[in-house]
Every structure is written in C-alpha cells, then in structure tokens.
Image 1 (cartoon, rainbow over the protein chains, first blue to last red):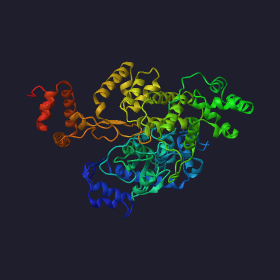
Image 2 (cartoon, chains in turn green, orange):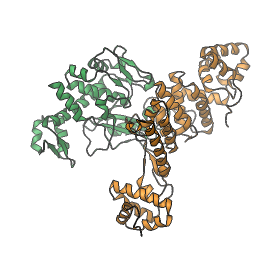
Image 3 (cartoon, chains in turn purple, brown):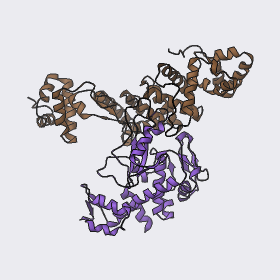
Image 4 (tube, rainbow over the protein chains, first blue to last red):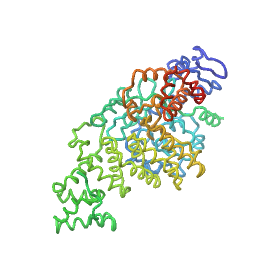
Length: 253
Length: 332
C-alpha cells in the first residue's frame, strides 16, 4: 500500500509513469505490498523511483566502463583525480571537481581497479550525478573518499547498512554470502550487487547475471571439502531517500 | 612436528634486522658463492624467521637452492606461490599440496608467529600474512593465534594500513573469546583503537565519549560475553557487507533452554529432548520482546536454582512470561 500525504494511492495512479517504465513496475510492487509505504508528497515518491532507476543505469554504465577488479592491496586509480591511500581506497585530490572525478571512473574505467563494495559506492555517486545539477553535486560532495562501506560520506552512510526488508525492489543493494570461501581468496567471501529489476543482478567482478549464476561463481571459490553453498541474504541496503530528496530539492530550487 | 623459534638468533635475521633487506640479500649472495653449505645451513635453521626466507626467496630461486631447502621452507615457499598467484573465477587447477595437512599447519604457524613482527615489509608480504592467518583460522580452526591477530589488526589501524581481510579472518574463528581481545581496546589511550573496537563490536561511539564510559562499556561487554557465551552464533558479517557489522548474535531459544549451540551452525551441541523441542516450539511463537524476557529470566533462574527452573519450564509459556515479568515473585 502507498500513502502520499495521507491519501491511499490506487492502481490508476500508476498512469503518472510511462508504460513499460521501470518506475511503473516498482510502483505496482509498492502498491501491492502488505507494507504501508508513506511519502510526504508525490514528488518524493517520484524521486525515490527515479533514483532507483538511476542506480540501475549507473550499474549498467559501470559494467560497460572497463573498470577492473582488484583486491584493495592491488587497487589503482587515475592520479589526475584521485590519490590511492595506504589501505587501498581512493581519496579525491584537492582542487578537483567531484563531478569530473566520478565521471572519469566511468569514462576511463581501465585506469581504475577496485573490489565490489567500493565499485557499488562509486555507482551511487554516479546515480546522484545523473540526477542533480553539476554545481549542486559538487557543492554537496566537496571531498570524496572511496573505500567499501567503512569510511563513507554521511550523506550516503545508509547504503552501508543492510537490513531485512518486507519487499525487495530494483535498485536495492543485495549481498551474496559465501560462508565456505577458500581462505586463499577472501575476495570471494561475498558479492555486493545491485538488483537490476529484471531478475538479474550486477556485481563488480562477476558482471550481470541471475542469482543462480552468481552463486555458481562464488561456489567455484570455496575451500576444500566445503559444506555450505553461497546464498542471497534476506536483506537490502538503501540510501536514505528522504535525506537525498531534501538535498535534491534544494539543489533544483 | 613443531618448529622451535625461541632458539638463538639466526645470523640472517640479525643482518636483516640491523642493516635491512638489501644488506641481508647481499650477505646471502656472498655466502652462497663462497660457502654454499653455510648459506643453506642458515636458511634451513630452525631459528630463522619467516621474513628472512621471504626476502631471500628470489635469491634462493636464482641460486638454484630450492631443492636443497628443508621441508619447512619448501612448504612455506609453495604456500607463498599459491597465495600470491592470481586466482580467477572458475580456475580449478588441482592443488599440489592439501592445505589441511598437519605439516602445512605447522609451517603456517611458523610463518605467522615469526612473521607478524615484520608486518608492513611490503604489500605482498602483508597479503601473505593475511592469507596465512585466514587458512590457520578457517581450515585449521587455530585459535591460539587470535590474540596476535587482534594485535596486528590494531597495529595496522594505527598506521592506516589495510586490515579488512585480517578482520574478516579473525571473526571467521567464530570464537566468543575473540570478542574479549577486541573489547580490551576500548580501554586504550589511543582513540583510534577504541573507535575501531566500537565498530567491530557494534557499539555506538556515543557510549565511549568519556574514559568512564569506555570502562563501563568494557565491563558490561565482559559480563555479556560471560552470560551469553554458550548461546552465541557468528553471522559472517564483515566490512565488505556493511559499515556496521554485527559479528554475532545471541540465540534466544538456546538461552531459554540453557542449551549450548555451535557458534558456526547454530545447532544445539546435544540433541533436544521431546520436552525441550515442544518448549522451543511455543517459545518461537512469541513476540521478540517476550522472547528476550523469557530467555533472560530462564538463564538467571537456571543459574540460581535448578529445581525452580525445572518447575517454571513446566508452565505454559504464557504463564512463564507472567512470572518472568514479575521477576519470579509469584513463581509458586
């Protein structure tokens, strides 16, 4: 059920979204859910659905960008925009615009290498860049540090949390856990992915595939005499859409 | 076989420690050219530290000494090769040496215990240390190294070096006492230690604003571990999954029945009786807050008065909750 400004929405309210659009499918998932989803305004609901689509777009852009996979110890970045830190993260250089630094990862992906969690953090920035005016994006993010979920900007902090949800939606961050991973390759301990909304997931290093495909790849990297298969965890990571909407609204004003 | 690494200091280690890696390599080359038997005796010495073998690895290959190495060194270099080789998805080459043999176990212990003092030597060496800890903990269930691994995690944190794989390996031990080694750091004078300990133990940083707050939290945590140790299970959560990993939880059903569980599989260590099974079924039907009340009360009563606990458990679960909420005052 969806309630916007106290009013319960009906199936015909989906006409606000183009036929065949991902937003429309998401709208129906929320509408048909037993959970009550509340929004202050129709714009706030539209913002969430659009941002989810942009997260998926950014995931597909990243997949095509040529961004390499590497463990933190072997990570690399374009020194024109980023400084590689001792722990393997990327810190934006002073005097660089956040929009240029983020865009460069997508335009010159082959100059970068990182693991799956940092790659997902990068695509959240790109999704916001796709939506926000460039100046506003640069003001919102005067400095950026990219290093999985450990040191994360307060504005995006919530994407680093993962919680059980009553419904899983396109654009959610999900996680495939590999409990019996080969200790020689801890980078296969799990895969952070984005739900692309068509039964497939994008995970940096594995690419785009169904849950079964991703589990198969993870299972190929288990220890000798492993008992447990990799599996998709029953939880999701999401940005704080309210917080981001307020930033977006101010930037668009 | 156990390696004795508390014997007199090896000459190659002394040179490396006093004059650095390059001098040690030069000394080894000179020795190998003039007195190759002495060079081999020193490198195969029981007292040698792993870092010296590691830095001399290229020289050993170049001099053709590989075949003359002792078993410990042969295994160690074989493991280093496997640890540093790129592994791609679907690459299922047959490993030449099984990681779970006792020989490998002993060599890994030697590598880790004599190697950690030289953490930071270079990225590859640190990666080897991480992987060594990971195999010892995950494959050999080796818990003796946990205090040393905890030290290494906090040392790296102070240097801003990479610690995520080591932290992940540490909690793969699924050992409740691993929490205590981390909790100790809440009392550290270095703020960075307390901050990392708070992240790893899922503690709100606001609870650690004062020295008193840190001491209170430390005592509270130790009491919590003492009380819940038999009922803890480890989740596998890591910094790769979340910025706030909850590495373990209490199995409230197990605490309610006072039945120890496996921290890995979450299964009871001894089979449930029919009566326990039935109690658990009713317990599971209750709300989360009621489960917590039941588990806490049951545990306390079991500790203090076994007979009263058995009587209380025979009540219907609704009655158990009523008694528990009254603090047992009308248990009869």
